[in-house]
Structures are given as structure tokens and as C-alpha cells.
Amino acid sequence: LMVEIPQRSYPILVADGLLANAQMLRAQLRPHIRGSQVAIITNDVVGPLYLDQVMAALDGLQVDVLHMRDGEGAKTLATYEQAMDFLLGARHNRSTSLIALGGGVVGDLCGFVASTFQRGVDFIQIPTTLLAQVDSSIGGKTGVNTNQGKNLIGSFYQPKLVISDINFLRSLPFREIICGYGEILKHALISDKKFYKYLDINILKILSLKSPFIEKAIYISCKIKKRVVEK
Image (cartoon, rainbow, N blue to C red; front, top):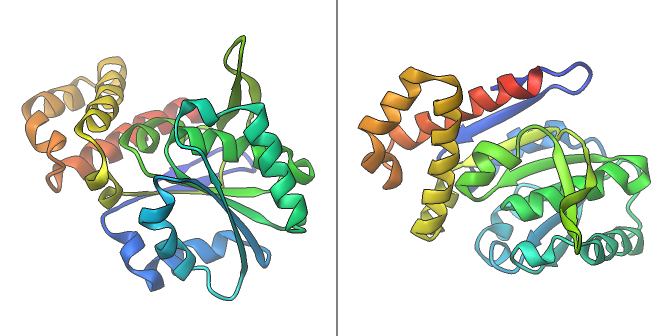
């Protein structure tokens, strides 16, 4: 899918097993990385599972990795400051690219960092939860929480690329699949009666991540979200 926004259009890729193929992942990532520096922001749950696969596609570049804590409690100004200090300490410049490898918390934090570091650098979303794949990775909403509320400090800043690999979902607790399905269902209820019927008929196949049902559910949900963003 292409999100068509003036001067900031970007593709959303929905695939199964893309990260397992370093050559294919490299072919998708490298055209969207304009400099020789990359910073990956991930967390201490996702990193051990998938970081090596992303690193294999970035050989030949300066790649630095920041591991933030897992969970909503890490989406704070303190983590934002930590990320800024990390990038400056590693001497990243205006041509650097950030990669968010994780769920919605990682994506929101990384996007906010990208929007403000050196007054704005490129970033790529690699969402690893179903909810992030169909919602927070699309549309450019970034930010952090404060004691006064959620997402009260942030910006709208679009990624250069979104890669949603179905294989990520197989490592998730079932509760996370349910949360993501709820978001997909919400998209269908608001915008697409035919899609809602498809979800209702195939709910068990989608929740068990059966192909091609889960791919279709994500693709159509992203298509609905894309239309909202383009407006």
C-alpha cells in the first residue's frame, strides 16, 4: 500500500517471513536509508528475538542500538532524553535514519525522537504487534506520556516505510492478538460492512493467524487507516 501524502508519501508492506530473508529485507530497507548511519530503537523483549535479523540487512552501515524498557511505563520524557543522549553520543548526524523495532510504545517514542533530532531525520517503522501494524505505525502520530496524561507531548511525523511481518505475531501472547483484532474490527464497523462480515465469518482463522486470512485482515485494515490519514 502507498500512503499518499503531499511531499511525504510512503509504502506499507504486509508480508510473511520478510525478516527471515536478509537479502529481501535489505532490498526493501536500503532505498529508504539515505546516509551511512542507522539507529535502531527496540526494547528488551523484542530485541533478543528479531534484532539480529534486522542487523543482517544493514551490513556496511554504522548501526547503533538503543534498548528501552518494555511497556507503556517507558514512554516518557526520560526515555526520550536517553535516546537523544544516545544519538548525540554516537555522533549521528542529519542524514541518519532511525528504525523503530517493536510495538506501539517503541514506534511512538522513536517517531517523536526522529521528528526532533537535528530538527527531523528519517525513520522506518517495523511494528511487531498486531495493534501497531494496523494502527499506531500508520499516520505519523508520535509522542510520550506525562504524569498529566497520555500522548500530551508529541508531533505528527510520517515514517519513510512501514514493514509489517506476519511472523512477528506468532510470538505474541493471545491477548495481544485479541487487542489487535479489536482495532481491526473497529475499522470495519466504522468504514466497511463487507469487511466486517469477512471478519465475522473468519474470526477463528484470523485469531489463529491462518494464511491468507490474517494477511487480508491486516491489509484491508491498513487500507482503511490509510484513507483516514490521506484526508
